Length: 175
Length: 175
Image (tube, rainbow over all chains, first blue to last red; front, side, top):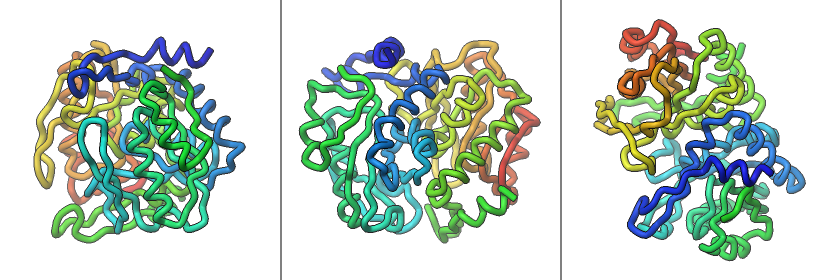
């Protein structure tokens, strides 16, 4: 099973980035090109029936699989970045992390009004980051028709937060 | 020509991130999945003869094409990130940007001694960032056998800096 093989590559890091948090380190997954291709293909298979107009990818771990998946689906890859990183005019959204605050930005011409997009990141924890991006997408007059993650930490219940935006919350492996 | 088509998609941003700098914005390129596939394939063709053991990719724009190219070459993708972002034990390197300072980190077990690696980023400017990564690679007992960028700003002469590490400085389009 793909899920088991991914988990065999994921490394638990105790107390990162803060005391009491067990961080799921996906970097060992990136060492296996065949596993990465399988993951990108599995994500693409999940999203293909939704016929998204674009894949909105969250800096920076959401960039790892972003372009491969968008390429498989033959749709634009739209980067969402931290404050001050995107060079052209942006819209922004503040959000709360489980450990801190941050601001995310998207270029104002990145997506078109009326588009139906999927939001992608490597990992679903509390859902706060992906929710902020969903708000950015809606501000642009576009619809969120799904969310896509490689890993879900189900005990943090981020899925509940995101299902207010779309019932399609797709993940490849779940803890 | 691929080079002309890439440049037709790149957007000049005046005075970003600082006064007097003309920033080459590649985000419009990401909107074209066919162009992105062509770029990833062109980079892969440049690097294939070098037979690299891994592709070391620099956060975060170096992650855009990183996994697609590493997948094409069937080699590990190794992320280099800004300070404090990688969860496991790291080695680090300080470096000077054309506008500021920063620290880059790599996991201590990311690459093996004796490996021959290529360093990838989206854009070659002064070469300071890629040079810092080359130093990280050498600290690990590995060899830098090439550098790969989508865009080269030749007037900043970063190529001269990097050729001290490897004669293979590969780019897809040059200004």
